[in-house]
Image 1 (tube, rainbow, N blue to C red):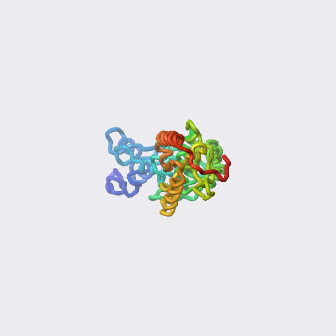
Image 2: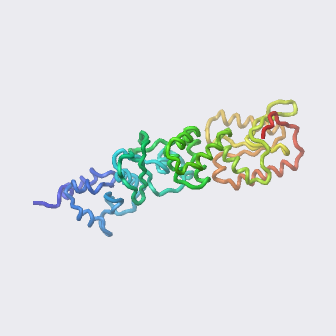
Length: 322
């Protein structure tokens, strides 16, 4: 009688019962493999490795991100779904805008008793959302994934970058993000709620970032979103930021966010009006506010110096609210 079990007689069962080479120890035992054999095969030099408590990886190479996610879901059990940074990445947010996070954050129903382990952060919740399936992985909706990621961060810069990315690339509304922060656990929400609150009075999230960045300038803007007219009272534009003493305009272009030709056409016409009126204008792509803030500040300082060296053109503010 062969005592090695079905797994030895039919080795293909190991791959069939696993998810991309990740398998629970209890599944191996159901194939007549003893815990002693499992342990021995996971020893250094053996063919397998222990990924998490009770979770086996059927090779010895370093686990991939995909294998870690599968292991986290197997560890967390039925109805678990991925949230936080990894879910944001799988929803299509750009990795360079996401904070580094090697952990896999999962949500489970509150009544399930599963603890965090190693690289898996398990969060029990009374508000388990309906999953969004991407590549056979259940994810929290992007609004929830973003706010869950923000709650684990502690500083303004990475939280701001993540919120901007979710709004601009993920099409999450600031109102939906604020609602989620106010509805769920309040732990870790003070900074993202404050940031979103500051953005309510601004025309765009990119402009919000610009307003924060402008505080580092030697000469700060005198106005935000004023209406500018020429000497005849004809409309010229409504720049995001304006230095009235030298007639300097700062425009945060929408092109690398919206990707619409009509937006680009309007931008060209607007800049033509600025040039005709003699206004100095600095254009900044939203992505540069994050990727190269020092460069943006240097350009604004240089533009202010150049604008102050020429006669101020005969333009005026229609609405003067700073």
